[in-house]
Length: 301
Image (cartoon, rainbow, N blue to C red; front, side):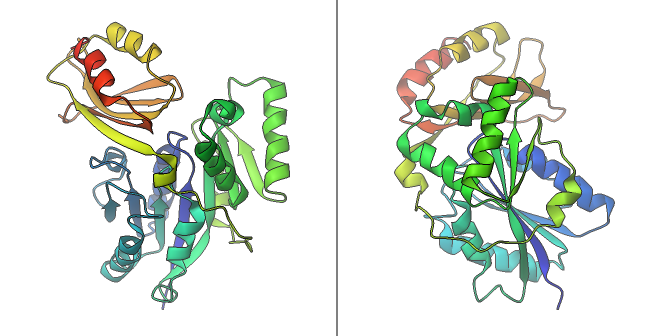
């Protein structure tokens, strides 16, 4: 029986996993490989699933983390994807609050041994956030550390604006924390995608248990009634608390255009959206004061 090749995408919130996912899917489409995606979101609303083409089988686990509250569902969804489709490749995009080893453990379940072959864990790391990790909570820092230590391939993303000294620091951390593991410094997760299909899972040591509940990560959805002014919105973003790790969703600006909006570590990104989408933003972070956030957002509508 043919086994599906499994690639696990790990990495902290907003690191660029979905950008990499799009490239992996295109690579497999070019080779006429049957590919499916399992995507996990902490919140009740899925935004990143829009990146998956309609002809690609997709299962979503929402409003929880597949390494803790949704761990039982993960095995069932993996089983379903395998039984419903004759897959060449299965890509799992874990929430940024997930420990990659817990996802790997689910794939190695006795129920799935005849269905899946795990190529490896790819950790997409937000390089500027890692360098500035001293401002983050202890649990968040620990999770990022674990995502580096247990990767079979490390993608250091958003490195274009870093100094040579900062890049050398990251290279040193890669070698120190995960000796012998391949890594790349890049932007927009651009790399030789073929490398990611030649990985093999290495022997692993005990890992530190870090879960979303320990991180105290909260998700919150804010709906907009209509268009907002870009300048006022970005002024609000500049004052937004650093405990917001990720913002994603759809907004309409004063030009009448709907945009897919993504925000990570102080950097906003707008992509034109051709379809009519619900105007709402999903916020992910620690200790979110949702009442205060709502007051500020209402003022820019």
